[in-house]
Image 1: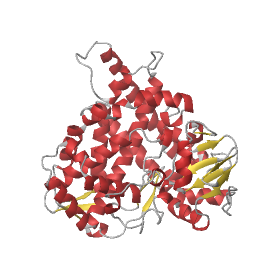
Image 2: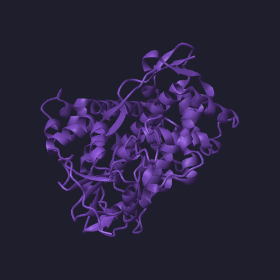
Image 3: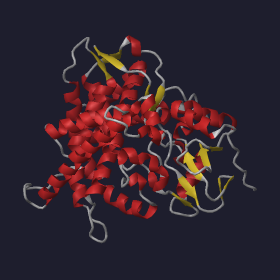
Image 4: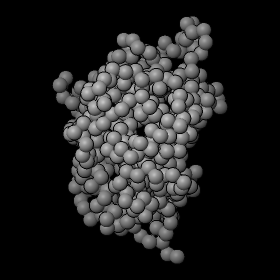
Length: 455
């Protein structure tokens, strides 16, 4: 069978860039209304011009199967736009060989016994964040969820408890995230000229100074923790992720440098905190907009009392709710890019050497052939059925799949179970109507605040 060429979207490059920055979901939908499967685009000025946007699960499944290097690679340099948030030595931006080595170092803290050790911490932080609720009290769901997820990152992953450094990091990170979340902040991410430091009150100048202070705080923490590891102030080794990363060694016996650790910690802070808080906010919105879903989930929790983390992590309906949240509102809209090294065919489509392939997670999750009525929130679609590997991609896939995926899923299940087991809530009137997603920096979040009332 002759492979089909990829059609091109008939829009100018500048128009495409503005659309993908200001209205990403609308842009992706327009791309695939006329060209289902794969379409040549010019949406990013920071990538080579041969960009191909893909929403065909068969292409993506075959693409991820070739991640080992058979004509396709996953160069970190193609994701260079992320460097302004996570640093240039983040695992997200490493080239294939060092990426594999770093991934081997970073994987153990997010799986198995290490992951389960965070369970009670997550439940305790959730209880603390919700402890002041009283009947009739209104609150912003995102603010509460950010408090919880920041606490998980700083306590379980960084080993930081309440203190001056803890509070300062929390404030600086919150300011940095919010500055990048609005329309102007999104433009700053994509247009370097707007990031110039032209004074203390310019957005570029403020972000640069905030980033410098965050760097100082993290490097100070790293230096102190290295001393502890050498036995100068800690009788027993800690079990948090930073301590585990400090103890990691590659095959040559080398550990991570301070700069590498700093960038990995930044990656965890931004990717692990903000994205999970956003997903939890959407979860609370849908659960209280569809009370029949909440009733089913409460019944499952009532049959498994005690908030045991291991039990909660295995509950089928709770898992289905979390999966449906991540399907209908994937926090990351796109997979990390792949590069075609030589002409090849994937699922009957012809790709050229130099093509940059970008899986569109948002569009895959809206395919009606995979998910009937895709814009309807329906956790039942994840019960008793499996989705093909290229059809459910909330954490990307292949060699570039998010390394913190297991922690995010575990955390979401425990937070939602704790809240629903111990609190009765309802949407405030202004939030009990459709809320659309909008761009928040590199991710998507609710366009309006999700406010809840304790009942």
